[in-house]
Structure formats: C-alpha cells, structure tokens
Image (cartoon, rainbow, N blue to C red; front, side, top):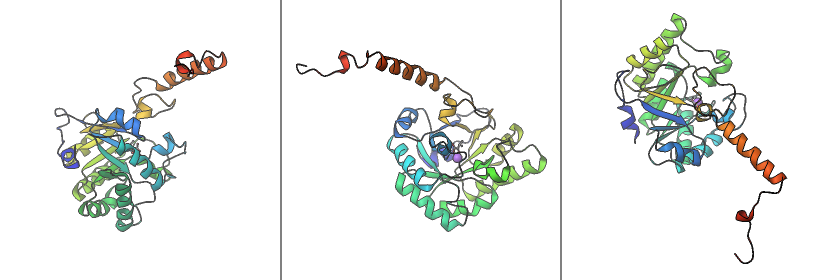
Length: 267
Ligand code: KIV
Ligand code: NA
C-alpha cells in the first residue's frame, strides 16, 4: 500500500471499505498487525503506553525515531505513519521539515502525522511539497491537553464545531492525505467527513468516518481505565497475568525447568 492509494480511499460514509488503522510501537507487534491493517500508526501515545508518562507532551523525536524504525522493520504491507511529537514542529514550517525529515530518514516510514488545525495548514503544504506526506489530526488533540484542560469530547458548542470543520477543511486544502478526527461529537465528525476530499479516520468520532483507529493496547484490554470510545476486545492483561502466575508457581515449586527445557551431556 502507498500514501496515494490511501488518499483515494474516500467512502460515502455508508458503503465503501473503511481504512483500518491501529497503533504499533514494536517490530513484533507490527508483524502481527500488518496483514490486517491498511495503516500502522507509531503514535506518541507510546509516551503513556510504553513509558508510563502522564501525557504525550514529554515524548521526544528520539523516542519516535526508535519505535518508528522498529515498526517499519516489522511491516511489509501497511503504510507506516509516525507521529511528530510535541515541540518538534509548531515553531515554524522549517522546524517541522527538519524534524519530519529526521523521522522519515531514521525510520523509513512513508509519512508523518501532526496535530492541529488551520494554523498547521501552511506547514502541511510545505512538507508535502518537499516530499513528506502528512496526516492531520483535529478535534481532541492530546498534545494540547494543557490548553484544552483535559480529554473531554469536542464540538459540543456551535463555535467549537465550526472551528473543527474549518480546521479539517484547511488541512484538506493544504494537501493532508488523511485526517484523524479524535473525540468529536458524532454529527460534527460526519460533517467533517462530508466536507473534506481526503479520508477521515475516526477515534471517538463516527462509524461514518472513512476509517477507524484505536490504540492497540487499549483495544486489547492492557489498561483498566480507557476512554468511552475504546472497545475492549479480549483482555491481554488477564492472559499475561495467568501465564506469569503459572511461571512463578512452577519456579517456586521447581517444576520449571523440566526435562524438556534442560540440556544433558548425552542429548
Ligand atoms: O498517538 C496516538 O495513538 C494517536 C491516535 C490515538 C490517533 O494519535
Ligand atoms: Na498521537
């Protein structure tokens, strides 16, 4: 799959095959997800998921580069998109190009994603014109948590709704190849999807978006507390817990390692 092919995957909200995207942070995880997904996102959510940070704000370019490279090594089919971390692109379009080119060179990823609306349009056009495709991200933008004051859904007031639709149109006009809509009330997510020519990818948005994304660890029940928009499929935590408890017990009662796991001189 390629970025231009993703760009054409606009649906009418009801028919047409939606894009499937999940986050991945490691090579092995990417290998497992790759054949099922159109896009793999190396999200800056790795700050919380992998590093136990309180938000995505402290995530660095080096962290994104290391995990991005691992994910690209584990994927063959899906388009890999790497998040630009907070502070690496907002100052100017030149700063954004420097950071984005570092990320694509270090990782081999096909594209980057950055957060923000109309104020980021010029930057998106600048990167796109210089060989770096950009995915946009509007609505609830977690890097702005300290301005937004939390992670509540957006678009509940007319003013907020109008801003979100305007933001998405600006990113589309600037040449974004897809736009993530996060944490936005459904009617506005639908309006955004109808208002832009590129595919929208929803998370806490609407089934009528042109695709969906979730944080893989959230979906697999690695965390107790997750936002309303996360569907937990099975609980990986329970599987890990059960197997680790059994290992601990077998070590303690000396039944592990058994003969099958032990070398003998005559084997
Ligand atoms: O960082 C991330 O995982 C994301 C997705 C939730 C869209 O940006
Ligand atoms: Na992100």
